[in-house]
Length: 232
Image (cartoon, rainbow, N blue to C red; front, side, top):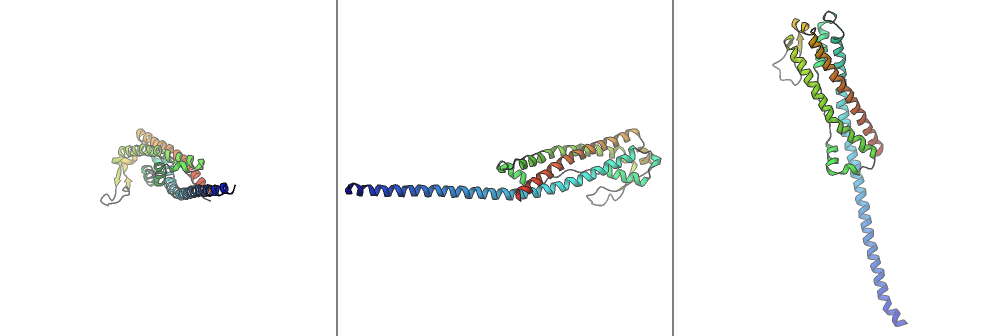
C-alpha cells in the first residue's frame, strides 16, 4: 500500500498543478475580457459625450435657421395681405430682405460617421439613443433638399424683380448679400399677380422647410436628453 501511495503522489501533484495552471489561464482570460469590456464602455461614454457636443452644435444652427424661415413667412404676409398703397417703401424693402434670406442646414456629424463606420453604434446599449440619433441624422439630407428648393424659389423671385432693385456697395468684397432699395419700377412689379404668386410659393416652401426643421430639432433634443441621462 505504501509503494502504491508513493507512486500516486506525483500524479496528484501534477493534476493539482495542471488544474492551477488552467485556472490561472481562465482567470487571465476573464480579467482580459473584463478589462476589454471596461475599456469598451469607457470608449463608448467618451464617444457619447462627443456625439452630444456634435448634436448641440447642429441644434443651435438649426434653431437659427428656423428663426430666419419664420421671419420670411411674416415678411410674405406684408405683400400677400396688403396693396401697394398700404405699405411704405421701408417696410417693403425690409420684407424683401427677409424673403431673400436663405439658410442651408449644416450638421456636425463627425462622431456619428465614426460610430457608423467602425460599427460602434451597435455597441451602445441604450436603444433609445441609437434610434433618436440615427433618425435625426437620417432626416438631415431631406432638410438640405428642402433648403435647395427654397433657395431656387428665392433666386427666381429675385430675378423677376431684378430691374426694380437698386443695389449698393457692389464693389465691396463682402460675404453678405448687397443691400438694395426699391425704385418705382420695383413697387409696380410687386403689385403684379405673377410676382405676388411667386412670393406665395416662396413663403409656402419656407413654411414647409420650417415645419420639417422643427421635427428634426425635436428629434435631436430627444437624442441629447437620452445621452445626458445615460452619461449621468
